[in-house]
Image 1 (cartoon, rainbow, N blue to C red):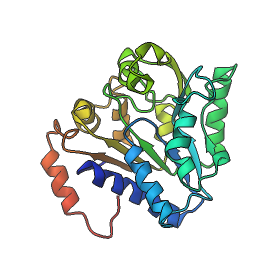
Image 2: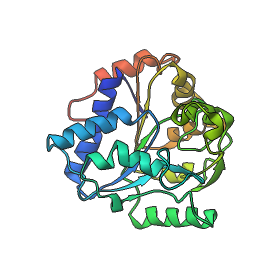
Image 3: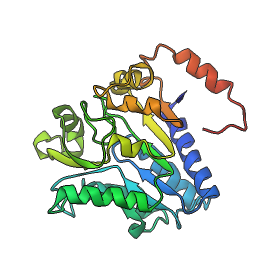
Length: 260
């Protein structure tokens, strides 16, 4: 696991560099896209680079991490609509090449199984962008989630619904109770995981992610078992890391030829 501590704008540039480098080498790469506030600056940076003709998504495919259950198809906070607004509509990524779990399916378990199969048929995810919740969840894998879990229906924790109420005009009751989410085993099958976190509210979760024991209590800690994880955090999110100075020194000494 590589930990990079830098200002938020630099974190966005570094994450965009990873995407740009991947698509230059493999134009048909499979991207894993996250929603929430953490990746927004990355999407802004990628849209800017696309406008400058530095990066093309024309042959890429993408899979979303999760989706609310029961939100109408035209609801602005349905994650498929969020990713369309924040990234797809701003670059040349074909809408038909973007896939998400079907939160409106009549048979939700069958929809989850179909989503797992679709990821497998695509050859798996090359690069997965991630955020982390204040309780340590990744995607919607709340505390207590099996480290071997697959795409499934989950009940959202009250803390997560309270955190996400800002996207629903502050009304926690408007945040759905259930979701479909890729499981932790699904996520960790991606070949490169890039997690972004900023702000003091994420500091405890980041400390557990990087330096805590692997445990379902903090689901993101499963990332410690992955061979290629990049954790991009600002000073506030890194505030509780005991080895913060070491991470800074290691990144400063990184060979120029060795990318994230």
